[in-house]
Every structure is written in C-alpha cells, then in structure tokens.
Image (tube, rainbow, N blue to C red; front, side, top):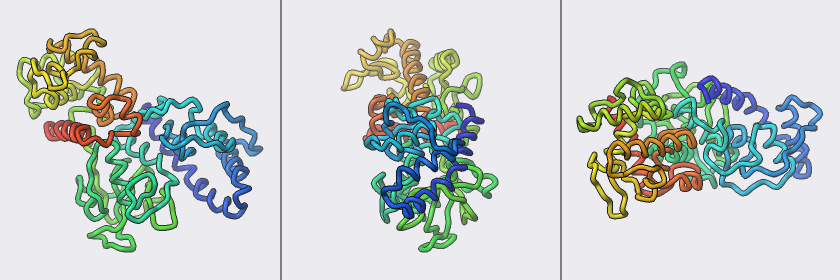
Length: 386
C-alpha cells in the first residue's frame, strides 16, 4: 500500500468516526430489537446506498470488533459474529469474508505508510473496547493501557502510566508537526500539563484514538489542544532501514555503528540490494543471532551467521554455514515476512518465533525472548544510525 493509499485509508476512517459514535445513541433509542436495523441503516448510508439493500457475503468474517477491523483490512482473534447485519457491515466496510486470520489479511493490511501507519492500524482494532480503569488488555483499556498495549504489539516497550509515557521518545513542537503514531497528552481530570493524566494516539488530520473515561469505549475523536506531543517511533529518515524494511537507504546501506566485520560488508550490501531487503536489517539480525560468527551453532541446532535451523536451510536450498548462502536464505525469509506482516518489528518477531505465533497473537508474541529480540534489533538500528 502506497503512502497515498494509507492516507486515504486514514481519511476514510476519520470520516466515519462521527457516524459510528452516533450508533450507540441510535441503538439505545431503538432498543436491542432495533440493533440490526440500525446498523444496517448506518451501513447503507456509509456505503452510499440509502435503500440499505447491499448484499451480504456468503460467510461471516473472523473479525470481532467488526466494522473497524474490517475497514483496515484486518482480522481479529475475537469469535466470529453471527448476525447477518454484522456480516453485511463487514462487506461495506471493505472486510474480507474469507479472512485467514493473518495480521495483514489483505494488501490493505500492509503498513505501507510506515511504522506510524502500523500503530494506527493496530490501535483501530480496539475501537469499541470498553474503558476500564487500570485496564491493559482487549478486555478493557484505560488510556495509557491502550497506548502501552498497542505499541507493545509492535515491539516498542513503553511505561505504564501517561505521566511516565510523557517522558518517552522525543518532543514534537506542535500538532502541525505531528505524524500518525505520535502520542498526544492532556492534563485530563487527574493530572496537569506537566504531569499529564490522559494520552491518545494521533492518527492524522487532527484526530486521535483514545480510551477517554469510565462509561465510554476506545474511539476516534478530535485531538483539540494537547499539552504535549511525543514521538516514540524513529523517523524513517533517521535510520538506515525504512519502515517497511524493503528499501536500502544508501549504496552500502550499513551504518558503521553496527560494527560489521569488513569481510561481511560486501555480502550484506550485495545480497540486500539484490533481494530488496535493507542491508542494515540483515546485518543487525546477524549481529543479534550470532555476533557475526559464521560457524556458530546453538544448543537448539541453529547454524551459521543467520542461525538457520537445518530443516529451514534445506527448505530454502542454502548451506547455513556458508555466509553468502546464509544471508541469502535469511533475506528470503525476511522479505516474505515483511510483505506478510507489513512492519520490521513483526517481521523480526516472525523470524524469531515463527509467523504462526505472530498471526496467533496479532502482533509480537508475549514471549520474553521474542520481545527482547525485537527490541534489541530495532534499538540497535536506531543507535547505529544516530
């Protein structure tokens, strides 16, 4: 998905926010019996079909918080909805009735707009989740719990409270300079401008996703005037690995800060450029996996520079103990994961824990080893490029 497509997706998401917000009020007025009719009517209006006769797909999606997850081309781990009107809603929101349950179930799911777009995409899956004070899971979130959880799914570790989160990353001068994925802070009812009591995730065009307060749900609303804005994601221009991991930033593409042995630099550069995977990403994975030892063998049996298991190497048709072949095999795997999951953190998680685990958890799996692995490599890339 191109940057323009990502912006169009975000704009579409914002344009329907007000209509979604009115759904609860309409349902309350019509009662449970009128829920399906109300939802169908809202769907018809959004689809430009005032008669409400849009055809439903043959089978229901696997999405749980259906409208928003479907809008963004996502699936969810929630149980499938059985209501025919919910299935129809999935259709007009652009959902995929044959979703496989992958993090990026369609090309729309790829975070072509960068890491910030990946944050927005993940946060949008939780629209409709109830506000719960102290909540830190999809069963219920408070404002900082939502922020911590969403970023954690993408391999970014943040503190628990809004006051602590307001010290993470770097400051952004004004809302005009904010980018999707930035954090916006407010004094709130229990804080101050210097010690914010509320935080939201900026999604662009003056809008944010947040968990406002008791009695509400995770929702989209105007940002207003934040007391502070923080950027906790690295600028793509500041690193040698683009947000998609598929565009080498320079001819060599490897910052000196990674400490790559001179004899391996030409291999990473040549294979990275030939496969379209950032050479710096390949080098950082090698540093994490083996410390650049070409003959390393782990206790589990993983071999070589890129620590490929023998069965994996055989499937790729490479010799794991040959540096050039090992890098080529790793590049093949990473390129597939980058295309499948749409972001560097998720591709790294798949390389470490397997793509099935990333799909099952809808993000970086909650394994200490995998979270440490993703955090180490992304930090390594940022520090090396600084």
